[in-house]
Image 1: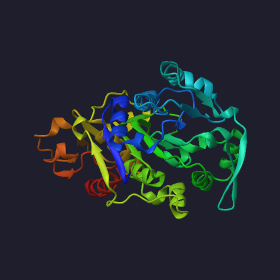
Image 2: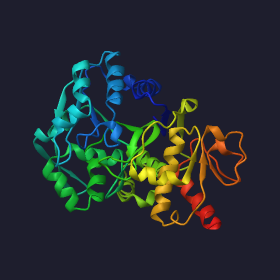
Image 3: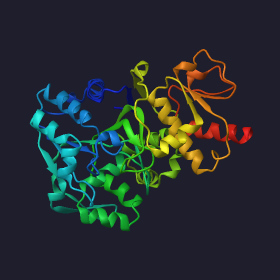
Length: 365
């Protein structure tokens, strides 16, 4: 699989099955392969909070494999030090998934830690991970209070013992996260971009992005996600380190991306958290789709951090409802192409929105 695949929509089970069908994943595995699914269940909060991987994505993957005769499938996770994996499995809907499909839930907190080495550095990983033939990483597209974002590379931190998680923080997170991916090599990364959090790994300010992203290169996946969230790639240190030590390629405009179901972009549906509600004060929304609206929210958050929004009195228009409207102001996406200042894209990346909005807002102050 070269590059990335992105599918848009709001039905994660059907979406992920369609993605796997496009990839023809079953042709790469023998029927007796042990397949491990590693979601992000950092704590016991449902996916609607923006903190955890939708159980519907796991369900779709399991259905895809079971329909093709694969039976050795297991879900594995080790929640963060302050929470219980067992409780997270229950609250996040994975107990129901396990019962419905007869798939075991493995709590990596119960594992022995085994020593591994990468580039002269010693790390402990959970023993169960070494028993998997094909590991599928299921991170969430969301922010993080220390590393700015968490996605494919960082999600594997759930595969190390609690004592090692504490040590990672003492080491500054970035280098050990990168090096961990040199030891544990997930074969496929499927990113839950349906719902993630704006800035915090624990959820609370969910942002709909209306997509699922798949790729085999975690550096490529994460660098692409960074731009979706409004970051320059060099702002995310663990992604840079992983690239420098040869674990993957950085996203560029030349990266091949196969987009599926662009016409099925879902509408915004959620009630915003306090920070998203604050940012929405600068938005005129009319039938906006969630991939476009989510990019704008991420961009406005970056502009707010720069101190550019406080004195800006204008509004930014977005949504299908503006297709025939002449807007004397800023419009985002192809639906606002008749606006005075239009930022094209369907959907646009937050990184591009930040660059253009920064200039336009400064000029309009």
